[in-house]
Amino acid sequence: MKITIRSKITIIMLILIIISVSTLGFLTYNDSKEIMINQIKLNNYKTLQNVNDYFLKNFMYDMEYIVNHWASKDELKNYRNQPDQPKMVVSIPKHFKPTSDKWTGYVTSNPDVAWIYLGVEEDGSLFVTPIDPTMPKDYDCRTREWYKAAIKNKDNLIWTEPYIDAGDLGNIIVTVAKTVNKNDRLVGVVGMDIKLKKFSKIINDIQFGENGYLMLLSKNGDIYAHPDNKMLTKNISHEKWVKKILSNEEGSSIHIWNNKKVVVSYLTVPNTQWKLVGVNPININKEVAPIKNKFIAIGIFSILITFIIGYFLSLIITNPVSNMMKVINEVSIHNNLNIHVKINSNDEFKILGENFNDMIDKVRELLKERNVHVQELLKKNTEILSQKEEILAYSEETEAMNEELFNLLDEIRKNYLSTVKVLANSIEANDKYTRGHCDRVRNFSIGIAKELNMSQTKINVLEFASILHDIGKIGIPSSILNKEGKLTNEEFKFIQQHPQIGYDILKDVDFLEESRNILLQHHERIDGKGYPHQLKGDEIHILAKILIVADAYDAMTSARPYRKEPLTTEQAITQLKLGCGTQFDKTVVDAFLELLVKNNLSS
Image (cartoon, rainbow, N blue to C red):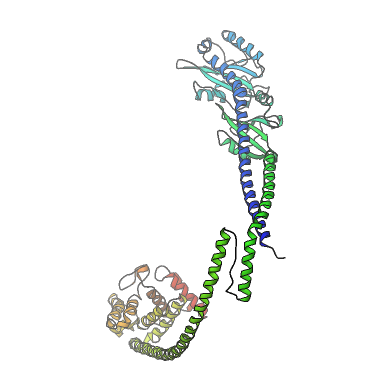
């Protein structure tokens, strides 16, 4: 179905407004959602602060006040055991009874307090009110954690982690304690045990949000207070959100807890490192639903308005466009370049029409010029075809010359090689045991170089060096070369001179300059123990390293004056492997062994 411009304009405007409104609505919705979530977290945290300030902190302050009060009282600071007074745990000495009576009144009136007591440094006695007859007779307060913690934090209040009391009642308690000092003398520690269930009672009595609840965690993730008594003393430090809480002082964030999305706010209770935690279930979709509905309504209204505007705008635009389309059809179908567009409006469409008319006039003039240039090009083309035939003739002649030059260069190389082989034959004529040695070394060397993907230029250099590597033996007496017994030191020094002699013999042959540098090094070793210059490692040319391996292998597998029975291939390969890193380059040996496998020479 053909779509008119009017429809296209309307559709385009609809698409643009839908994209714009959708993008803007999506971004604004997400921002509003984020703002609302942050506000919920902030409100949750503020509520938690209020709970801490008005309930938990006040209660703990009251408990701390009592302990501070008694720690500063002279009747405790001046306390000393009476002469011959035994250690006491389940009884009170007479001279301390007035103080104990005061404590009895406080404990009786405050059911949240389990005991108030003084631990005596002098002998470890414990004067506890009310008296607990189930306390063990060998109890020594100085060994208890609350006592040690108070002494460690001298002059400061301490709160312990919850623990089971020392008697048989088995109450879970929390101790707040402080040292009692007389000048520099430690009298003891005054402490007060608070029942852990008091903290749960404080938390359970507070309404936290609409459906939320509070809990109190230790610094290790143990639950000290929770609406569900089954959760008390349970450790939840393995929960991911709990780990975050334990590692930070305060904050508010959203987590998944018991398969529900909840806002978790937390803060650290002073002096204890406990965490007061507020958990409030949250339904994000429900919270942001009003905002979402408002954006949907705005989007629908915007689309409706856009459709109406687009429709009327298309009416204004399409009339001039229709006139232009008629002229374009006349030009494209009937090739009529003498027609012009007529537009009566005074807007951009009139300018467009005038420019279109100018374009038609210019096209008409350009077509005339094109016809002239076509004739000129046809003439030039004829001339180019004639020149092309001449260029082809020159090309054929050049190709023939190149082929002749290539053949000449190949002939020169063969002559060089023949000359080099003559020199090699002169070497072998002087040493009956090395006949064919140079040719075999040449073949091995070229094979290794190809395994290492070396260029043809380097292979050519290596080929000449391989054939001529023993040319220096011309200067060594035959009696030494062919001696069957062990060489003397002097005779071996003669042998060690043959690389240098060969290098000097070829010094005036320019095209062998690089090859003679290679043959000079063909008895060097990787570990620097070779000759004549004790080169080692990368100081030895890679082509010389190839020549060293090829020469050594052929020497080991051929008969020599000093060894009538040559090594087998397997024995020679073993020697090459043993010499890797000391005599031979490992990369070259690996390439040579691969070559032997390919040529079925390794077994």
